[in-house]
Image (cartoon, rainbow, N blue to C red):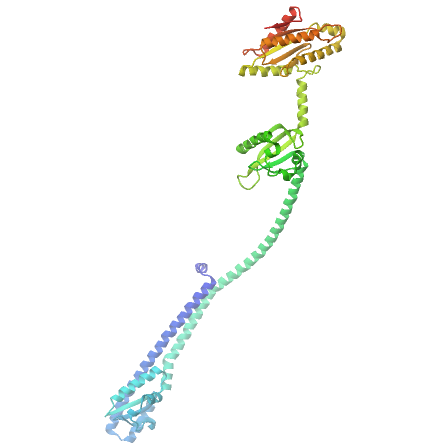
Length: 520
């Protein structure tokens, strides 16, 4: 049953059931119809044959032994004895001699034409009439010149007989078949149709409940979506407000490195509106030089998918230069895996950078003379030694100090001595090149580093310095002189060896009478 329910729908089942019932009833009626007519033909043939056999035998006996009156009585008696016969007649030489009820007395068989016969011999059906007519004609053709019997069947009796023998059993069979069909229908209805209808009713009820629930859920979902949409709008506005509230520069580029979003601070720095920035590249915003720098970094980020940061000076739209610390990271700006761009955040650290530079400058600058100190000298000397060892770039050192400087401090005081030191630095600064570096490495000791300078050229610079200091007016009524040592660095030198050698040359100048230049 379960398989049948799964295989057929309710509509299909009804179609199949009624088709089977209708076909069965049609087949049954056809069989019964043919059976009735076959039974009628057999009954009629049997009745005619019986009548002819009986009456011919009786009449033959009577003709041989009896008169006419007795013949009438016999015919009437036989008619009563065999109720299936409506009319019985005695025929001799083609003429009706006697007939029951005298209806055919004196009639010639030849006068009984087909029309009269059809009218006279009325039977239950046309097929039955035809059969009687054929029997009558056959009999009449053999009854010329001798006695014969003509009969007419009682149609009402025949119909009742047929009804009793065939139609009543047929009706009983039909009722039985109908009851059987009803029982089959009841069986199918109880075990198949009703469960299906109940199941469908339950399913429909369940579906209706589910539909109501689904409608409710859709309404709840719609409300939730609306709330979510409003929440997203609120959050989007909130995020936009937060992003625009920060002073950091925030921007987003697509995978083609065109700007697709930015905050207000970034737009203000460039002196443009957000609409003027969206869709533009770095070249269109910052120019060729800065665009090349930004493009190189961005492509590297998209290839490595790693966070990178840089610090650099960037010029804004109004010509303002800011030192920016920028962090850039790969950023998915769309649903596709290929939609990876750049998210950048830049912070203005110009003040911090300058403060740091100032701190660095102070750590590398002599506070009194504002030239490089010993730490700055050591760093620059290390750089020059690296260049010498890697590329063979020559450089030279000039070391000097002020002769009898302690006497000046003792005589004029330390304040006066400080002014002498400051004045001396001014004289030296006017003589050396921009690429040269000047350092105070001790109280009255100084060092000049001359990049890309040979010993001979360094000696000339040293002599010029000595002469200008001696000719200067660093102290009234006093001539200030300096003693100098000059040396050129070699590839095998290190910082200590180089310092030791130039320091020794300086003291050679002092030992030899001061105010002189010693080289080596």
